[in-house]
Image 1 (tube, rainbow, N blue to C red):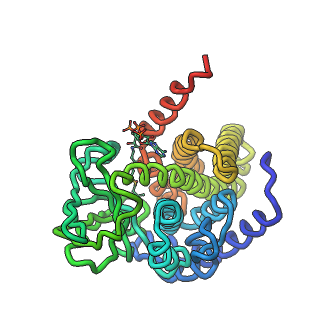
Image 2: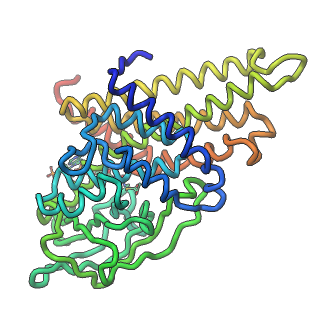
Length: 384
Ligand code: CAA
């Protein structure tokens, strides 16, 4: 491994690896079948400090660096991608947005229980007709006295059902594009917030993805996150961190598929020897190892830039683009190496392949990542 981890980072990696492979892995296949949310795992993950890893200790977090976070997240993803997506959304776009933009009062009221893992959070940006283009969202928030009244429908919301608090974006001014989008903290149980359709998905089946419907949902004016018009910036900066997280999830699932493929190739005999002796399989294993290692270095690099306080939007998108495309290739090859058995539910590679499919889609499709990367490259006037 090119990147040299510190003793503390290695300790966190080992601790999470042990927990993940013992506890999270034990029920992952069953939960994929039953779609049961791993609430008990999250309780334990909260105790281990995994639900607000990069949040300072005085707000309930662990004050870990971003490199430690991606190590931990990919270890959880190794065993269960459904569990890791909830951990990813919670740590990045929910907790970090509150830390960066919240008032002291909001941090004590909402961030502390989230970061300590007492409750799960959700971030609601996407709408039925506004996915890649969130500026075209139509949800509205109108100030009436000392409350905002929110109306609109949000779609594909991770933890929409099991989350206890939602950060939701809505337009406070429809005439100024992204500058008219604001963000609000809405606790579940607020009258007018209804959990809508629960998606029946191809993968990540134990993580709930729902519509959230806001019908004259009234929140105190004090629940605005940042100022009016900050909502798009909050979402974009949260997604920068989130995209490193999706890359780390991709890495974890790819590593699991790779380890399973190597193990199977060593054991499976055809034409008189283990298939790992056949060059056709050896070369596939070499390509998978190379792709995984390249993704790992891109992820560490983006996370290190974040830790150093440097701008990392482009690097997060590069890591997300490469790692999410990589895991789709690696899981497909892992099935190929397993042959007919890989197509059955007797082997985990079938689940890895389904889980991986969304990684090139959520928190910005591969096409959106290419837009972000090319915008940054072409905007940099110092380059020829
Ligand atoms: N951080 C902070 N601010 C940023 C930013 C960033 N990373 N990126 C852009 N901004 C700001 C810009 O500075 C600019 O502000 P000013 O006008 O004040 O200068 C403003 O935002 C607009 O920037 P752009 O002109 O670059 O924005 P755009 O409209 O051209 O395009 C986009 C932006 C990249 C296409 C963006 O819309 C985007 O990322 N779309 C994809 C959305 C997405 O990822 N959705 C997934 C939702 S979450 C999810 O998947 C569900 C889940 O629960 C897991």
